[in-house]
Length: 563
Ligand code: FES
Image (cartoon, rainbow, N blue to C red):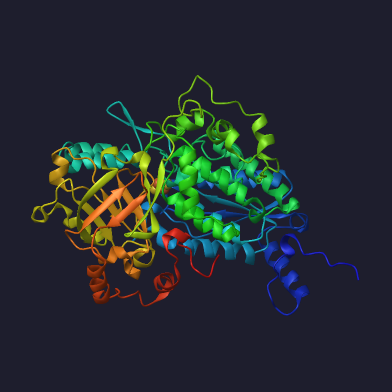
């Protein structure tokens, strides 16, 4: 029997009316109503996942980028069909965009696989959008190529460059300490986000864009050009053209997401001193791709790779500086001796072949350093384990305070982000030696809000205290800094040891040893465990499904039935 060819283009994924001929006929009739003729419908179809939304301000220039991608698809002989998906604006979502990452991943995957398309271009950028899209493309078997909105340009206030959101936090801390008055903080507010685009420091959006390029799911050089640049639009056109080639090639994200690709991406993450959020996202994406990745892999890699990129919060520059110095291709060149050069991404070339045409970091710039003259030592990220975090926690050493790396202090416990407002209560008697514990912020509790880097008490900030040890089962923004042990697993809401901490208990952090311990006798803990009552769970809808099925942070906080 002759082999039946799989349907392509608009004939893929026919609507089920129990009559394929009727389905095809009806589909063409409705597409004709939208202005598509026979010549259009013979072309390979490239779906374009559009995350434009008034609520996602970082994507305000995305409509132009969509047009650029469409032009590239048309030039290469494809038929571009744009479709909307959930869009997660980090700042306008409550309790946190992270609560909806898995929902967006699921909805995006379903739209890719349910609609007819031979390849898909996924346009993301703001914090959780790109991770959700990566999870979707790892699960769908459709050839996929990613592109991001691109970072904002840096702002300026009183002659100092500034940007979202490392400087948002720095100036806000100064305001809380009384060093900036209401008028000054209002002026800062107007200059933090001067253009369209994602946060222009090495926060989660920038980190995930760079990591996606390193994984091979984005065209070389596509992570860093500013949102408002012509280069961003040219990348849109090139991405559209490349999507048509991928439609013919059939290479899917799962083919690209190999263990070697993840190993390379982890090295890039370490060299960037990227966001701690990338740990949770990469764990989830790897599970979707069937790649064995654990917290220990991040720890081991971080110990081998020094800090090479000078970008806030670990450095002093902004994404536009990194971009001008050559972006991810030049960083990969600097890391070349440590990388697996046989990986093949969406470009279709091996990494080794791509790097042949890339120059090493030049002396004319300081944004990208070499392995011989790094910006900072290895070990920018540390995985902590111990009696308080049996399944692990992470700490960004590069943005923490060395004098707190070995610290023992009494706990002050806060029950969730709302309770953190108590931190300013003088009656608590908080000293710089205290350890601030914020629990009830894990995946099951609340979807892991970025509350872990809770503010320091005002009275201490006014005295010049700029950092304290903080511990949480939640996350912190990639743009934040401080000595904060995050993603503590298991979280308090499922009865992890964090749930048993009481005010005054001694906690010990030892960053060099990778330890986080609760110094309370086991008998006492056993009593508390017996008395512990699990908090009430959400009783309907997405929040119920999420709370019932979400995995812990050390497993990527995906839903347990999705990997
Ligand atoms: Fe959108 Fe930072 S808020 S990337």
